[in-house]
Image (cartoon, rainbow, N blue to C red):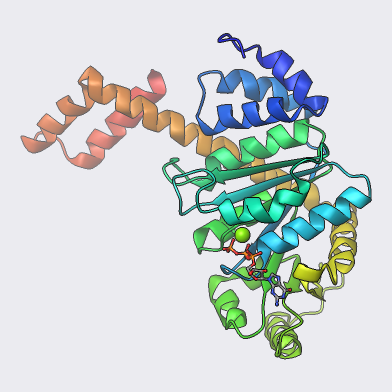
Length: 322
Ligand SMILES: Nc1nc2c(ncn2[C@@H]2O[C@H](COP(=O)(O)OP(=O)(O)OP(=O)(O)O)[C@@H](O)[C@H]2O)c(=O)[nH]1
Ligand SMILES: [Mg+2]
């Protein structure tokens, strides 16, 4: 790889399905390469086609196993598939996700599948910043479906939801998941519920509990609204995966018909712009520290000449003007 990277040719190669070019572009995103702006510009005209599917749920519920099974089923339909495994708790790419790599091994040599682990801790703004860019890379690389698996830890669940066109929430029997899900507010954001490990005792009870909790939230019967279906699976044996795919297709059609797809994408773009803008503002404030503006303001606050609110206003004005 030459030192001077030709971004345009990288993007062209990624569009032709060159896995190394895809990997390289995602690395540039992850490392916040100085060429990031150029990368984003080169990707932009080629994005907006993929269906982005988020998978979330408690640790060990079967997200990776389901992802792998979904990849297999989508490949049988001839679709090109991208997989992003996002671990917001780890600063190391691949470390905590090693097990996933093993599970994904069967797809490792398939040229129609791109698999990438991302660690987002240490990134300012966590998921909100690097993951959407990685999704753009896979989208531009002509993936029909992009599966984004996130280890469920509170905020990141909500973040992955805002990234996805369709959100799968996974539960398993006997994990007290239903109640946890209700607490996390995840019930409202699920487009499809998957009760995995249906080979275990209590799966039907989990489905009943879930139905009951959903019925509590659905007071008015608005027929135009999407009602998240509940699908039972045994991901480790591939059972029910066809039903999950059918539910995904149905949700995609509804999203297109109802205008919800565009509404979500609009919100997603707004959040993305905001995250990048905040990042830029932070960087500029950092520069001002070096330039003396921030220390100067601080000195005046210490001396009682200025209150910190006025000083902060000053700082924002200086940043906006620069
Ligand atoms: N009995 C049973 N076990 C399953 C099923 N699906 C997955 N498992 C097992 O459950 C364990 C966890 O599965 P994973 O797919 O790694 O779960 P995960 O949600 O990705 O886990 P984290 O990424 O650690 O949050 C593994 O040992 C799987 O083999 C299932 O349908 N039935
Ligand atoms: Mg996993």
